[in-house]
Length: 288
Image 1: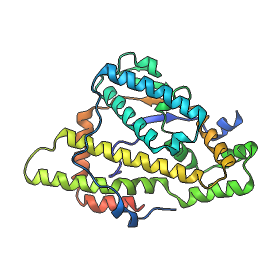
Image 2 (image 1 turned 60 degrees about the vertical axis):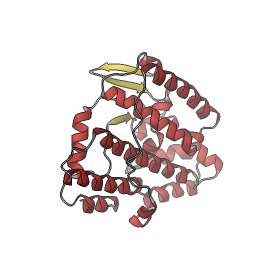
Image 3 (image 1 turned 90 degrees about the vertical axis):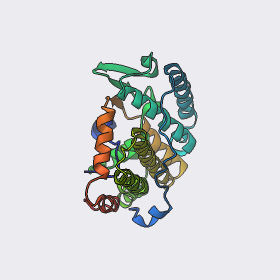
Image 4 (image 1 turned 120 degrees about the vertical axis):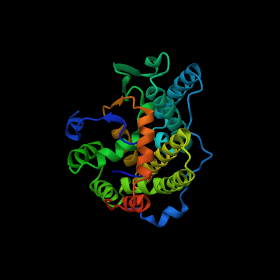
């Protein structure tokens, strides 16, 4: 059981194997004290109106693609752009969960596959992709030789391959993201205990806020992981690495989940015995 990452694995980005595509520092708990904890005042962004969200998504998608074409690195180095993208995706995901998708959602790149689910061609609509998660997922593959061979053909040198492998081996993205989420999870668990002690129900909005803040922290941790990775290389090699990952054929699958069941699951998780100990151990890379 993962105790600090409530929303992950719900959306899938399907990438082919590395071989098929190319034929075409561990963070410890010492930094946790400086991380931001759970903020009760923060509310997860919700769709105010169908028309407003559609207009916002259409404008953002066009702007995002322009930025990506002009300065590809901005899609990972620009923190405000990443935050705007995260919040917009969050609103669309919640609308899909509630089975109240945006009218004319097809114009935003979504194709209905039935049962309230959608697929998206993320090469045509990169505004819906999670590129940092794609980086991390592919580089977690135990067999990186096909990727390395492809990068060499594009201009990587042997020393660049060594640098990439060394970074991946010494920086565990999963541990870093769990460490980023840990203060939020611990803070939320304490608040839930207060509600339970007072025999008061935990408001759904508070649980959604927890999920939002945790997911946002993980997303930002992943983004910083990729930014730091790109800094290990000169401009030419960083560009090769980034564009290689951007060009991988990718399809996104978004399926609805029952908000009530998700909320109940989160509350059940933070109420498990020794939750704080388990969460701290997980963030330190120790299986609870």
